[in-house]
Length: 377
Image 1 (cartoon, rainbow, N blue to C red):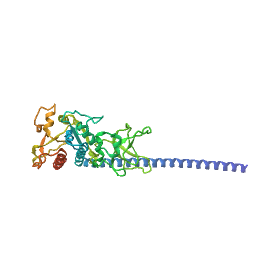
Image 2: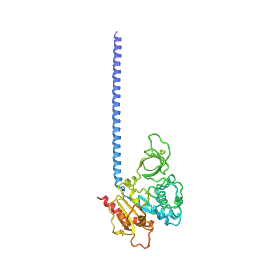
Image 3: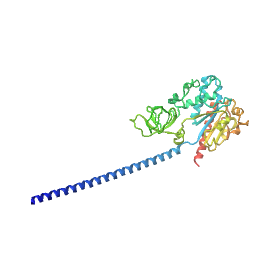
Image 4: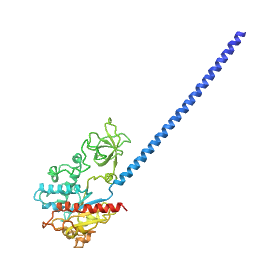
């Protein structure tokens, strides 16, 4: 009986030990689970803190870039009729190339080609006749300017074979900052949206002239030209690169880069002003003429959007005379400043492509001074 009692007590004791051991293990699991929760929470807080730090750094970097960005624009307007002074289709093309080069060198943001001969051309789309020595000069000039501004790897996508561009391949390249080589590193790139299916919730693919396509953050229509900002961190093993779509002026206003020019056709001289793409219009207009005031005596005020207008063979007077919307005869009344940018010239005439180089080189230090004064306020 005593043995049975001892055996019973032993079993009870072992059972209690097992219960105590189970409770300890349970308590240990609870403590371990609590510990992992704390570690997970700490990791989450650390991740959030790092994310906030990165966002703060990005904001500071954006502010720094904003400080070095360029917020003013310079536009140039000239008549397309200057091509009619060229003796052959080859020389017409070369003249357009000279204008594109001059405007790129001086970081012109917009080129306006206005009509002073009543051609009333408002688009470069479609086929036109008379592209030899005469006719449709505005359209041909605008088309060649657009062709040269477009990066080489995008030209086949946007410029089908056309008679106006027959000799454009012989022109000197603009070599602007947005004409990026295939392996050249650049924060921004111009691209064309390709017709390629994507997964739901993913952005379109863009050909940016690199060895890999870029997947952007938005779904866009195929064939659209876009400006892409590439992500700084890229996975070298990925088949594609990552980027986001930004406004075409973003490289200029944020990073201070010259990112090419836009081309606009105007049916007459007054339409150059009336159809200005900027909401506030041109707050500084400069007319160039040998009858204008001496450029050395002129001071350029602060501005946001400047326009420099050049005349053709007969000067700005011809554009004023043929404009149905103008009742004035003196071109000087149309501009804030009417300047002779090459006083004491040794030739009876200065060709428009020469006038652009002369005028922009003369006005550039004055423009820089006006911008510095405005930013210092």
